[in-house]
Length: 417
Length: 218
Image (tube, rainbow over all chains, first blue to last red):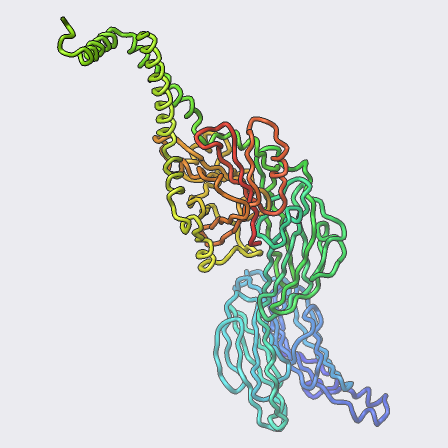
């Protein structure tokens, strides 16, 4: 490993800092300056164009650390792969709030283009970071890795070998000495290994750190209901029936379903064709707010955990869009999004139709169509049949016999004499 | 003299035959209605005033103001006073043939109108009477509509146990083939109302009877 460290003022590690200030400021101020130191190395120091070189750095008592050429602000300890296409000198600058600063640099020499293909497959750079740059002894520190090939193996903490897998790794560092110590953990993804670290304060100064509040992942629920005001409806319904000129209330509820806040909640309402927004009708939790929900949408701000924000707006149905026969169902669609949350949609089905025509419906015959006629026909048939019978020979003969029988009973046994 | 007497006797006989046959035929053709009417006439007053609505309400929740889900297509119309307990047939085509076919399955909801319980006017049709050979079980389901009085209550119960209670507000007898301005008021009634429509008088289809009722549990 070729290490090229540039010393601002040198003893292997650039250690100064504030020296100039010491020179230029008053002694009373100079006495408050806290020295800082930084170190940086590149390995390998010579690469082919575009090939990786690992830049590693460390620092002491620097609260703000910066590496140029796109690396940016970094933690007190760590490393990163760079892929220079020309000879580049990476400079690390460390400063602290007490006026100290330190500068160091490492140069990566680019030896033209390699004639042989690189043996390592292309892979995204892997990074890691701790959730805290500094920790008290015993604090739980969580490391997070990203990039690389998506698989991570955590190995070897300074002095204490520990192992783990996954994109995050949590452990506690203990320091019972009187001095701050640096602890570094390495993560390997594919063929790349990077390390990240944390400064652990001296145990003598250890004090319990309040457990940080862990907020659950924010989740949002969106619902849309409504009521037909013209029809005298006062509740809220998941679907509506409307006719021309009806006025409808649409109610949109945005709810935080977890213990997290919803920030920058933005709500829009898409009205179906033939629906007209009534100006000045939008309210948020009962208070009138500006129009625009049906055009550009409105920002209702923050929704507290487990709370709900209620938007109400009124619309009117244009009779020209109501079918003259039958019904058609359209949807009013509400959409909402918030910081870190994708757009959600909720719809309210609205069935449009004309007033029912009782006269039309009543054409349906729900009674026997011709029972009276049928009964009449049966009666006429029976009567006619009997009348025909009275004119027949059979009827006459039976009638004659009946009369003879009657006369015989009247005149007695000598009737025929 | 005898001949004259004989002719009068025959005429009387013909008249009696005509009347008896006419009455019998009409009676038999409307036997479903006759059966219902006899049952209603003979039923003790305790049965006529039976109120399963109260029992239902004790066991089931009334439909609340906030409906989280749409009303289903399975519901029953219950009119205790006249012994009606029949399924409502939804989503029917509105041509007459389809309605006649669906009347065999129960009481037909006219699908261009609001569902019972929703805002608007809901119209349902039921048979007042049908021939003895009518296939369905609901040939005289609305035979006794005219027995209902203003203030009588009945209810529609959906299969998810949501109940909408109605209170009769008026009845109307009208000619379906003539313009009647009274129908306009029924068609534009505010709130949630239901119209029970059937033929009138029973056994004919000359006129219609409409029973209007409004939802009282909203």
